[in-house]
Figure 1 (cartoon, rainbow, N blue to C red):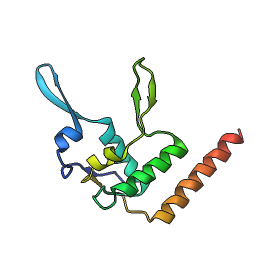
Figure 2 (cartoon, one colour; figure 1 turned 30 degrees about the vertical axis):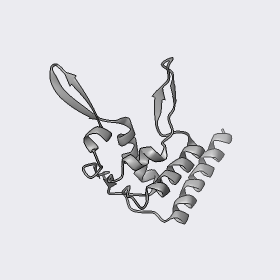
Figure 3 (spheres, one colour; figure 1 turned 180 degrees about the vertical axis):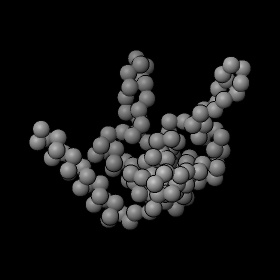
Length: 128
């Protein structure tokens, strides 16, 4: 099944979700890394939408996942080296209104899935 998404209900989505630039004299835009990765992260955290009422829980799930697996997002530091760029609560809050076709996963089921996946990968890594 494809991952469908919509950013049109994000406040100031044109600025929050897109980088604007000119190419061959023509205005262009491309989705920001933050927004693109959050769209895919909805599958990881088991939320199909970011709302005023769930953005803090969304952030907690992202933070736990990043603690176990490493940052979802990276950036270049001053020396051109890629470094982790963990999501902040403000990053998630700015994306209130993002929707995808991901089903909501209850907290206990989500934690069980993430921990079991992490345990399985850890055992596989250490057995080689």
